Image 1 (tube, rainbow, N blue to C red):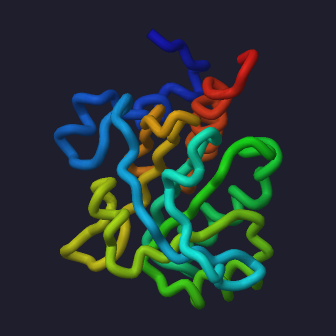
Image 2: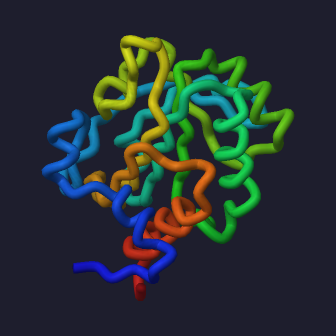
Length: 183
């Protein structure tokens, strides 16, 4: 069993075991991550070619589903990723923030806030449904986070990702450290 410092125990509970994931929908730890193809936006604009998750094999990936661009909680979360990008993600992890906002909205937000990572526009909720994140009743994605290893398997899940709790970012950092060589 994994041991966490006392201040990280709550965040550790958010990294759900496989049995819990099966109950709430979406892939479980150890499962092959469902593939998707989505339009991508960055601070440089909307990409001409869509991104397919499977094209990122060989690299650890973080999928950060979130409800809406430019809302308070989502802005706090994305700014935390931006401000701690080198520390948490470094140069060897691909962060893809996913919502069902249109790509142009995500590109504008990324440009305004200088976010150094990619956003994926899941307008139809296809990826969100595959990961149990899309809320049909509300019409948007829940704040779920998936850490995917370089082979394309789910390594850790945080449902929901508690964007206001600093220990959530530490738990994410710990999960990514487990995927790095020489950990």
